[in-house]
Image (cartoon, rainbow, N blue to C red):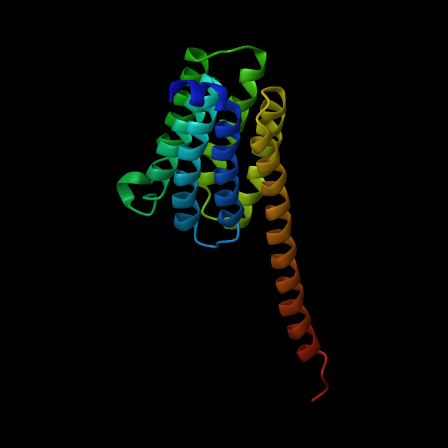
Length: 189
């Protein structure tokens, strides 16, 4: 059993990553922040397993921080969980986690992604959340590419595409609403 796992660890890691990728593809199509965050919890768990199998402790640590952060942020609407200190604490935990699991200079990229994720997921405005996720994808894309996480590279590509689709749909709806009201205003009475 152990020899099978060792011989196929790269394939297993990529399979876990692709499962996470399919989860995140769905995530950005939802409007409710709490739904997005709960799906991201499951996704982060899969990424933790993916990076553990690849032997990348910084990837594991920052996805574990992300998992906990998403759980805490899902309770943001409750007064005791709505403190400005919560995102600051998660940024500090991300810095410490990166320092404790430092692999090489590339480890800074997941930290950058973690800081942007902390800020993005704290947003109440879903559109702003998605826009702040774009630098996260750039950081993780590079880290994944360097560390042969092909599922991660594909994931970040899909995340960006998914966000762009959402933004285009939102823009189209806003234009349609704006177009209807301006047409009604121009109708002579």
